[in-house]
Image (tube, rainbow, N blue to C red):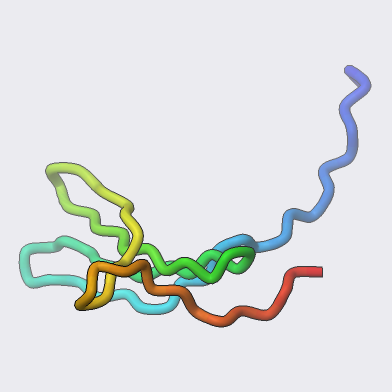
Amino acid sequence: MFNKKAKQPIDKRFDEKLVQTTEQGSMISIWVDRQTGVNYIYTWSAQGCTLTPLLNEKSEVIVTNVEPID
């Protein structure tokens, strides 16, 4: 009607690797960027949420080998 373009399917950029919940109702999950392989930790609680790169014991960003997105 308003010259809208048909929606194209969007490739899934992130894969959810792990999800845990706490007794207090918070959630922690690990996400992997399928383009870069960078792992992110996402935390959610009633007070708010945060997303940050996941680091190893040497404070280096954890990168997972990923299959390229076609």
